[in-house]
Length: 340
Image (tube, rainbow, N blue to C red; front, side, top):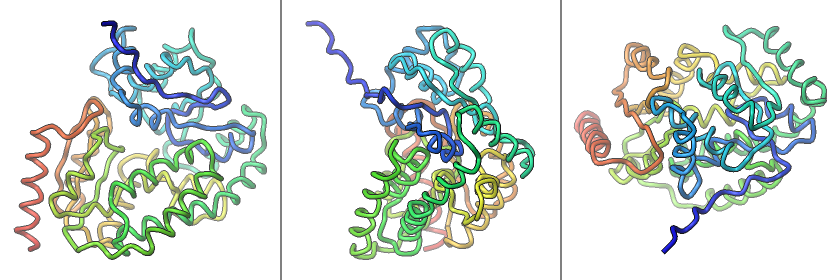
């Protein structure tokens, strides 16, 4: 029998892909529909299709699966318009962009300045706006229209760590999706508020060990569920929370300066310490992606954060493997002995 054709995700013909979180207000002000390619890749029924496509075209195996997956996704679905984040995300993005020159339109680029600077970020936003045919003033207007959905995301986060009514997995799914609002901020907000109406009436979850998950969003698909199956609660998802832009700022530049992810380990460290104290965390799981330069941050976090830390490394999309499960089980047992 012939092999069944894989079920491929549908990428809207009128959408623009993004390789990482950008000031989404800018393309929205330009009338564009934005889809985060990371979400399409990892939520696909078989993400391995895109990895195999990249490798078949010569992509090296010792390149992070997120980059390989995005490349394979763009090639497989023939996505023509992409906004590439060339500073403040993955060090391999520019090389991937260069490899795609014969196949896709380099629609736009965005680069977070390092070190972070209000003036440099404002100038980059002006350049970004001009490239997409809109204005900074129009983008600020969109920013104000998104305040409501961002406040709702803040309530969802609060219902996770303080209200104990939202699971770590639910928290992760909603917050990580705020990088593109599912391609439709209005529909996203409607669905989010319906979820919150339901969550507020849930019974309070039994108390357990309070765990934070720091690092890039995990490619391990059942990490949250497995941790919580052991009697712990994931009450902090560091980077997905940053995608939701949790810091209340009155202007667009201030909001994206407060967004810690693009600016390295030390701004992230300040935010993590605050959340460890605020959420009364018993321990942290630091997820690192194989072949990612951010793995080096682990040594900084271990030296500077004074709660127990388990470092996990993932490579390809899929459930926890037996070795990872054993390490998580051992870590949770140690925390139970320490904190009772």
